[in-house]
Length: 397
Image 1: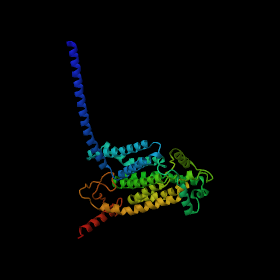
Image 2 (image 1 turned 90 degrees about the vertical axis):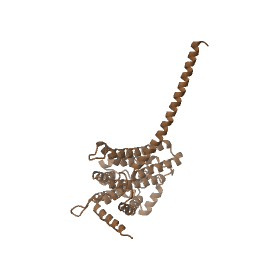
Image 3 (image 1 turned 135 degrees about the horizontal axis):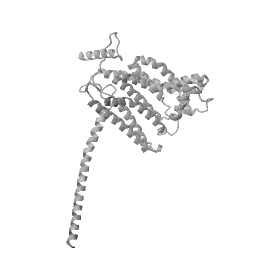
């Protein structure tokens, strides 16, 4: 080997050695980066979870439960991996939104509120409506996840035992275009109850009351979604097709409903009635937090419940069951929630949190009674009751 070849060979060996050293350094850097990323991700997840409130606990709990059902009964679905991926994406978006809103809110503390804080607060408070819509539309893919067949025959038999007739067929004798339009209008009002109540509370910046309404609405919806997955009902509109003389004819409102149902109807998810569940939850929230709005909504909700049977969407017995069970549960739980409002929590900031059912702890913000003896949101009564409860606790032996 001549000198030129030896120099060339030595250069190759040096290059190989340098490449090996560089590769080792890059591997070490990659491992070090991975070690830094893992704790960072853990910290961000912990911060996102801390920013969540009771509504998010219910929402994420439902996503976890439905994902578990998908995993267990995957053979009954065409694309189980896709559905679980969508569930994970929605959960990630919820956590990210809570984390970003909390971060912006902490940075924006001051006498004036920034546009960024208002923007993220808006989406933080109003995304629940989109979440409810997502869950309902997704139910169309879950109707036979656990039970292969429809269970409408059981509810039809229960309706006939309860009333002696098939209610949807029996009501057809009273149908006229004007009545059909009125009932379809009443059915459409469902979409405004939670929006109007939430809008009033949001405008008044009553965050505690706002998230209370959203949380027990989410609880009612989530329970209904799980029941709909386990006990699939397709509704009288499908199961009793051909039992009546013809479709319900009406004017522009009936045409609007038919248009919406043509593109957005979910076959299934007709038990329990999510329309009734959501309406009663909003009505209960109005009773607790805006009594004047309750009296405005009450006749509309009553007509809406009738319209679910008139329009052949639900069975009458299960509309009544949904109303009764929700009202009873709300009455039982309201006392416990009231007791928690009056009880201070040690070691927790008294600043109300965003997104929690009762705030982040401590006493609720007190709204002083007005000069005419009234109060805003019934807070004067709450103030004196809490004060009396604290006085009694101090004098106990």
